[in-house]
Image (tube, rainbow, N blue to C red; front, side):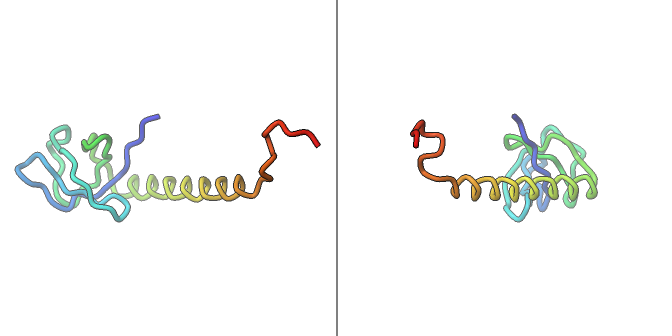
Length: 93
């Protein structure tokens, strides 16, 4: 599965490399595939490349979905930790 994460462009250097804020983490991303992107724009970043300029609402909705997925994963992992050690191990009572 491929995943592109939305981020806001904070700075563009040499017209090709941007500093992007993605959910509180800053990363460098190439903007060669999105030549119209400018500081303040939201972009989808995949594998170190800004692949699409998106609007602020789309960025907000996508970030919300990603945070929901994080919560679901945490709940699932917490539930898995509550399983008995012999569950699924082929041990018969």
